[in-house]
Amino acid sequence: MQVIYLKNMCIGDKLEIQCYKHNKKIHRAWSEATLLDIQKDYLVFGNNKTLVTESEGTTWRTKEPAIMYFFRNKWYNVIAQMKKDGIYYYCNIATPFIIEDNTIKYIDYDLDLRIFPKGDYKILDRLEYEYHKKKMNYSDDLDKVINNELNELIEEYNNRAIMFDERKNKEYLEIYNKLKKESENSNFI
Image 1 (cartoon, rainbow, N blue to C red):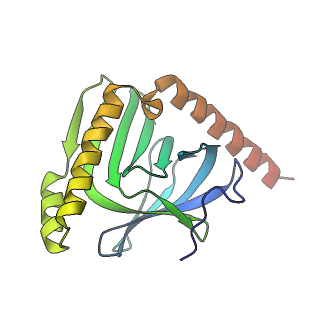
Image 2 (image 1 turned 90 degrees about the vertical axis):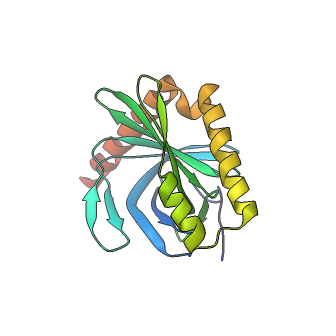
C-alpha cells in the first residue's frame, strides 16, 4: 500500500474520504473534501452538502459546512459542523489517517465525542464499541490506545486546542467558501 502524506498536495485539492471498520470493510464514504491547510501534524479540509454513501449503499448529503481535522499521529479526527445556532463538534475515535489513491482513509473505532455550542459534551456509542470489540476481537492493547485517545481528546477540548477554536474554524470556513467560489467561476470559463 502506497501511503502519501503532503507529497504533491496543494491547498484547494479535492479528495474523497473513506471510513473503514476494524475488519477492513468500508463503513462510510464522503464524495469530497477540499484541502484548506497543511500542517506538520495534521491536515484541514472543508466540505458542504457532500454526498455520503453508507456501507449498504444508501446515500444522503451533509446539511451544513464542515471543517475537518485529520491527524497524522493521533487516534481521532474532528469535524466542526458550522450550524446556524453555533459550532457543533463531532469527534471520531479513529486511527491516524493515510492518503491513498486521492482518498483520505482511516479506521473508525465507534466511540465518538459530541460537543455542543454551549460547551457541554457527551461520549457516544459505548455499546457499539463494546459490541465491535467482542465481535472483531480488539486486542487489549488496542482497547487501551482507544480509551487513552478518548481521554486525550477530552483534554484537548478542555485546553481549547486549535481544532476547537471557533475563530480559527470560521477562518477556515472563509477559505473554503473562497476556494469553492473560485472553483465554480473557473468551471464557467
